[in-house]
Image (tube, rainbow, N blue to C red; front, side, top):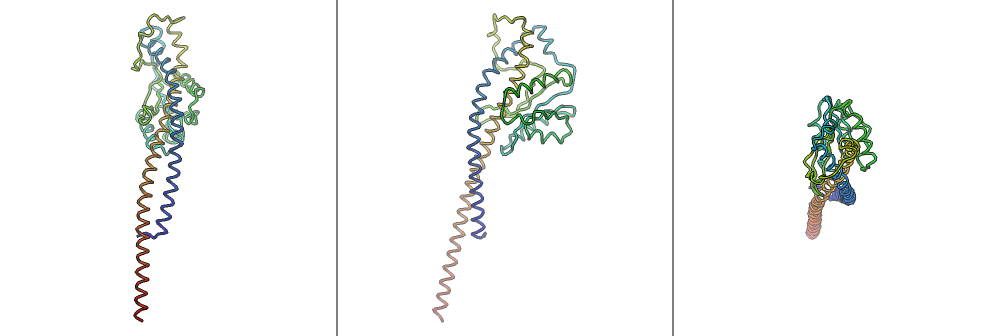
Length: 283
């Protein structure tokens, strides 16, 4: 059996860890709430852009089809959004695993987040590290710069741009997601083309699509950053909640062990005293 001092020292250490995990859980809840509000505000903007671009791709307009036709380049650009820190469960592991599954030796990896950068920097891929520090606090201005960089490379050095991020399904569920940004394809997002019935695009649908394309790509990147940030805080909250629960169980077990050891120690001392008294009485 461990000594009382060892158990007491261990108990104090676990209690201190419990305070830390509890504080981190509280902070993550507050950050997740803010990230979720930003996520809700972004949806309306992105849905409007997405509706127009999806309508344009499905319209059958010959000029639009020429605009969205994929270039004859096999090289891919893969942007991977991770967190800058750990302690968020399987959040980063899942996103890295998803990115590894679609990457090939010729791909250009754009890590957005320190964890993704640390993983891919030693793998031999061509790395574009300009946006490593843009994951922690989503900012549309930075997302627009990232989107412009993607558009500058597309059709010249790469033939496809993919975005790997964690999609926030709800406050308790998130999932790693691969989104094809370029070339443009119509996605099944529930958009009703009837809402554009009678709408005239000036000077043409193709020109409008060209003007909206940078905004659409920027909105997609920003939306992914917002999704990822909200999911990260949700994952960290869940991880810290589980850690706090485990710490509570350890504290209860150590307290019981301490009380048992203390009782054994007291019982031993009483036995020693009684034995000593009996020995003195016999003298």
